[in-house]
Amino acid sequence: MTLGWIGLIITHIIWSNLRYENASGGDTGVVLFWASFFLLIFYGLFILIPQKRIIKLTEKLNLTLFTFLSGIYALIGFTILVGWGFLMADHFYEVFLDAFVCGLIFGLTFHLIWNKKRNKLKQMHLIPILTLPILFLFIYLFAFPKLFPSIAYNFVPQYVRHDILKNTIPKFKVGDDLSKLQKALPGEFEFENCYGSRGGSIEYFQYVIEVNCCKIVRIEFGPRQKTGYTMGGKRKPCS
Image (cartoon, rainbow, N blue to C red; front, side, top):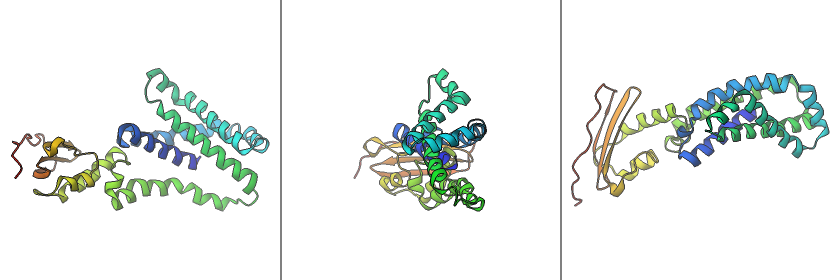
């Protein structure tokens, strides 16, 4: 289930980028939290209670069939717990793919471990597995954005994305090329014909950037205030 949880988060990040061009658009931060909560409930109701039956099926069915049925089983459990709400709202169907992938990974790993490694697996071996969520969260939410902010920008939840933006904008100044800003914050500053302005206010931070002739001609930022910065500089001919 630990590996399945990591798998569903990665799946959610991928389809969010395909649909919204960033993980923030798919509410990845929300899914990250609630998936953990409902997965614990699923584990208690749909794994622990019928565990004897699951073990018998693991020993009886081949790897491919058990893995596929586990994916279907996860879909059924997800629908019973919370998926019915998405069906009624007729929205956000992609989360069913997340649940299916989680079930597939659970079925694959459980079948392999139970039929091939269970006699070798000791209690102490479970400790590294149980620490995987902490390691994954540390890498995904802290190390990855710190080490590779421009890459992480479109793959992290909204609040981490805002931190990257807040830490990146002060690195630029008037006269810098727009292309460097776009490379640092991909998808955030797209201007037609290299002219325009963009501003925003996020938690404790506000900014405005104006671009002309593919150069930054104005950049202001600072602590968030009740009144934001004015925008709309006059376009000047490129020399």
